[in-house]
Image (cartoon, rainbow, N blue to C red; front, side):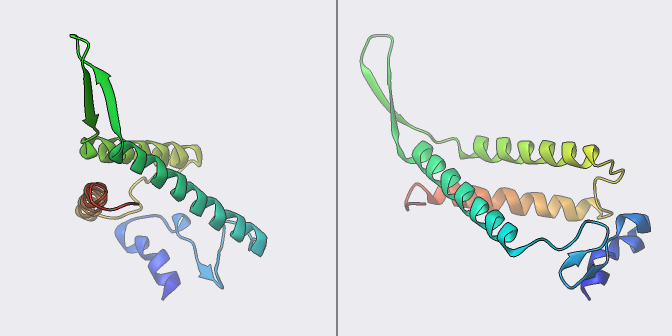
Length: 141
């Protein structure tokens, strides 16, 4: 079942060279199985990265920023542009993915999936992140 899912792009016109057979948790053609310490290192790295990202995001969305008006009076403001954060994150993710795929010499950037599936995933990404950022107004990260 897993190898069929990974190679399901063949039916969609993706060359067979772009499919990977999965066997015992190792993708053929990608490399060999990594030691457990490497998996633990990556897991801790992801955990730390998300913690730092959450802390920074909460700091931006919760804290009040003080600026001065032209007349010299202090003005307290809160960051309320969650849409901007979502769009900047999405574009930076897409740009990074594009650069990595091009650096690896990939010819097909859609993995053989129809555009409607990518649009559905994009709207789901946007909606989930917007709800996440809007919830930060009421709860801590």
